Length: 149
Ligand SMILES: [Zn+2]
Image (cartoon, rainbow, N blue to C red):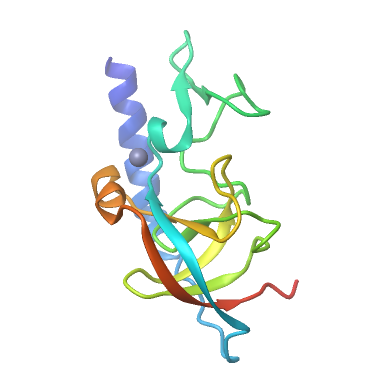
């Protein structure tokens, strides 16, 4: 139990440090498209990101192709750490790096993926699970800047 508490303290500290230097840089060119999408909320918890503690007390993927492998909590598919402004997408529709302006949420960048994220669906990152679930399911007209990398 003590180990787990320590673990969360380290995560919280790392999150605080990262929160400051991870603002989404606003694109200067006009948006490529305005698209109506389904938006939902998620956080880095076990429920939202499908992970669990193994018998050693280490966080591991609970499903998917990396099931059982050690997971860095809060790390997105792009390798960057999740923070407000991180959005999980279907990379076939919105490539990683695509930027969005989402009314009610703000600027965001596609950095994550998820098994349940398909088509015109954006999963928005929130620090707290409660905030994410309060967001619920909302259909929004978002401005889209496709990644040109
Ligand atoms: Zn959650």
